[in-house]
Length: 436
View 1 (tube, rainbow, N blue to C red):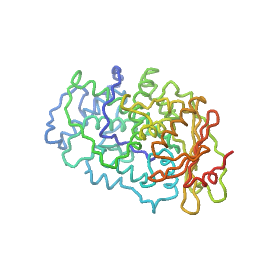
View 2 (cartoon, helix red, strand yellow):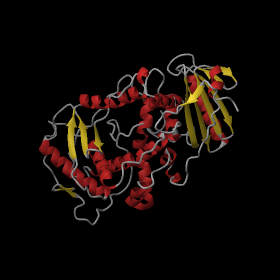
View 3 (cartoon, rainbow, N blue to C red):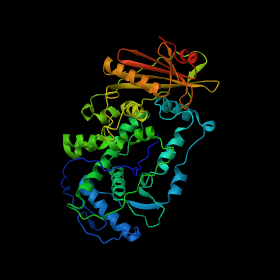
View 4 (tube, rainbow, N blue to C red):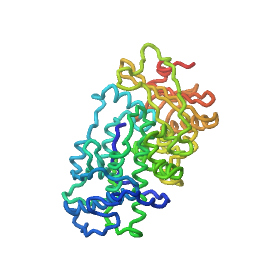
């Protein structure tokens, strides 16, 4: 997964209680480009914002972000507008199956293990489809600017989008936009602090509008989803925006904004720590070894610029069960990633395999806090296979006959550990990973 700090247009403001911290003693905090955080500005939004209006809106918004967050912008943040067509061209790195690199083929097995992206679609294709119609703005760290995606030269700037991306600019100037992490779960955990901080500030900003501050009403961009929108991929990608603000709030309760700032020096190690802030920072993920028991026809990917295994974590396991209907989300909070089928996660590892005939498989081992939680996960996974129309062929083995996830599977549990083996055919299961 690639870092992308764009806020999704369909993100609703999250309700997070709290009071505004007083501005720091520095005179400049709360004043930016000649605009105080409590200033009134004359702007007409009906026909979009011209350059001078955009300057006023951005200047006051920067002052207000400073006032809430307690850090001074070190330099002005430029705002640029590009068309949606240009954005799609920039991010359209979709690849067809015939032209995938070794790393992409390795990554495809990770997403397939989660039952999120099947063999009829690639991860770049699914990501491009999900992002192409939903992104309305993003912060570009290399350029130090905010890019708004609009089909008008005088865009109707969504207030929440602007505030959110300004927080990213402030993070870039004072804190960090994340460390290089190799594993999917670690990446999501890092983004949860970064995006959670931005969403948290955005929500507090919105709470002051119309109550303490005069704010310009701007339209919200409506999400546009194509028929091929991938719900599972969205649930994984949206976790930092949904769970991150509550994680940030929990840090603030421990020590105000200083505790949040300290988090950038010790990012959460897993989505488990984000979803359950009481487990941060002490509950470190368990190391889950997988011995190589493949035969000579199968091998792990060794031509990568990263480790040959991945860890998907509690958040992605929740997304897997939710996207396939095993978890019924209808009666729960819209984006609550805490569920008994995933909340006992203690660690996991996925190791993809390939052979010389274009075949792919994987071994996925998940460690749980208790044998009961491991049993519940195994039962939930069997339910997932049943929902895909899998045939039970005995000895913990299943076979899905058609569709994007047509493969053979073997599920076994040993105390707190569940192991899932995947191969194109049932006889191939033992070739990928022989039973112990």
